[in-house]
Length: 595
Image (cartoon, rainbow, N blue to C red; front, side, top):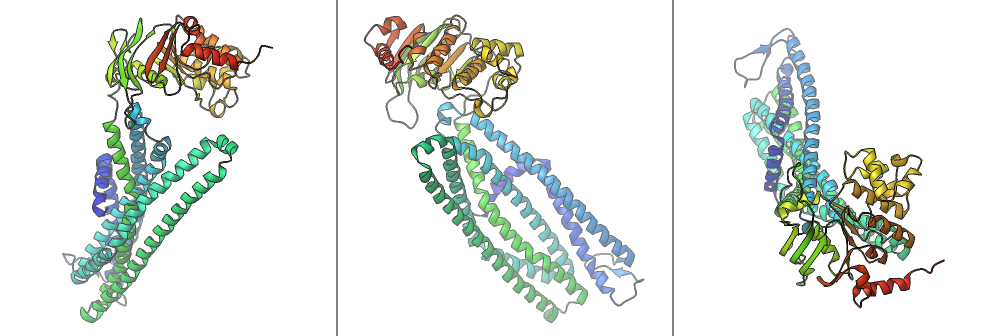
């Protein structure tokens, strides 16, 4: 990756900033002009040294018109220019901060929306830690790259102004100074290429570090019990070593570039001063003014090299983000329906007819194959079967998260398509095995499902979930703060809050995915009774391997290897010799003895 790789990033900044980008450049130019003109005023001031202070001050020969300035006016102008330079500098800094943070926030929101719009099968293939890193650290690096671009542009603008002022003083010396500056940049080209490699390494190492820390903190209890802390520490130490080596290597690179730039710049200044005195015979005022310019021009080439190295090290992540956005666009769901559009109405049944689905990138065996089943409306249907039998895939298909590769899914007589799937999901509530609660109040958690729900509707949902009694017993009722992921409640209470949140939606379909797996026997039985009370009001699809949940179902479907192997009522199936009967026998043998 060379300097040309910066052009797409510049185009992105200009395209997404509009006129604000031009205003920022204008502020940079104004700040540079005031500084350049103030240096130009040094020449007549030096020319007056030892002369009559009342005499007029001739402007440099390059300025047309032969104008002169009085000493007070020249000094006042110098002060005014310095003040203007400060004003423009302050305005530039504030404007750039506002512009770049707005750009950063819009990029983060666009990525957030792109992730949310991914097809479910494309989303689950990605590591959550990588997505989290993308939305945080990677976007922050884009901000650093954008700031580096603006500082680089400022350097280029100032350099152009300084060279223009130098041209007024001595065109020959200006051309020589510009040529020497270009030589410096050419000599340091290999360091810029190395900066790109360091940028790639930084992205890889930082993401690996983030994964290690996230995995360890997410599974801290398991790691502690299994004594895996040392293994995680070794893994993190290895990653930190790589990050350390990368950071030190980048610092070596940057400092080397700075040393080379400074040495070459010092030699260039010495050569130019010698040429100005010995070869061109420049007058002292012009020579001093040109020397002042050189003291500003030479560091600008050094700053330009450093800025290019920083930009090339950071802009690599912009390529990654753009590639990710292109992938999201290619794997996106159809656009969301209008807010007022109504989802399909479930009055009879959800039917799967000849449905087949195989996960991309997996083996040739489909997760679901030639699947035919019906989920009756306002009844409780249980999906049972061993791990890998296709229960979760079937539920994802019914919810419109996955699109069948063959066959059809119908809500009554209306086919479920990728275009109608988002609309259908508005009528679905979902309670997962691992409940998710935010650190706010009970009311905050319930209103995640429906922000405008009244307190009366919240209490009605709590009543339907069998949670009203224990919530009434809390000092602050629905205003009780739950703590991190509901830490102030028991497991059964947390699951009932999750169920109440689902009921606040008043869904047509309620999906319970192993919702009682973390509960004790008594809590499971109580939760099952709560679900049984929904019969006749809500269509419930239960993914379960616990007898308490299967027993309340009106309709039980047993799956194996992605196919239906048994269908019927629980009472009939439990007396047979199939999977449901084996489930009953196995769980009864594990059930605790009656007191």
